[in-house]
Length: 231
Image 1 (cartoon, rainbow, N blue to C red):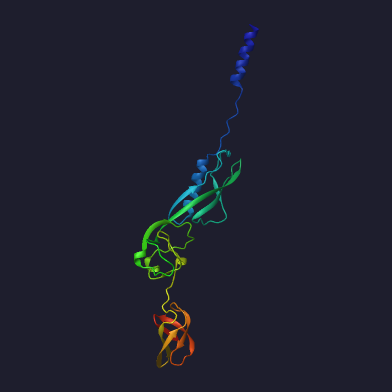
Image 2: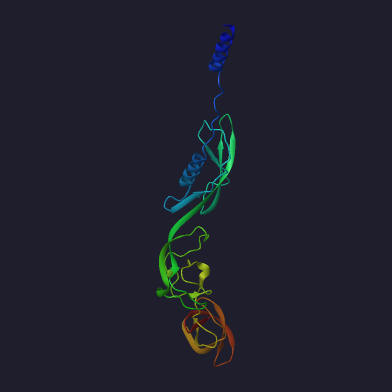
């Protein structure tokens, strides 16, 4: 009988001993969503973009935050490419971590529809407009065909590349040994003589030219094909 009482008492202790509440941890998915929301609030609203948050260590155990998550970072401007964003919890059990996100930004840009060789003049037939990820271009891309048309390729370039300012140069309007007109304009008169270009020149460039009559070499500004202005 006494033995049975001990058994009942032991069972009673099992049922009435208070249990410690299981510790809850912050969901990593909730952190990813918070990062995406933060980026959405701080990126250009007219931009089409795509965000991928790089996974945190699956073994990471952060106490569940009883307050809204907060963000901290070096600047308020979030740009295309890779961004590092700090997330912290200011509840009783404080913690903070850094997350990484890859942001792709899409624009309609000018691309080559066929390859070009260095020095080749780029025509409308070389160009196409496509929606592309420009996150790695550092802002160097063209959006209008007129910005590129009739320019000279700066280097060999394959079809499909995005064209930027470094992709082309102004074509020379005057080439070395070209026969040109040398114009001198003063108030009340204008003199034009025949000359020879001593070097290539683009519009607005100061080049050396030779006066065919006098043999004198002088400097002048390229105005248009075959015309150099000497002041």
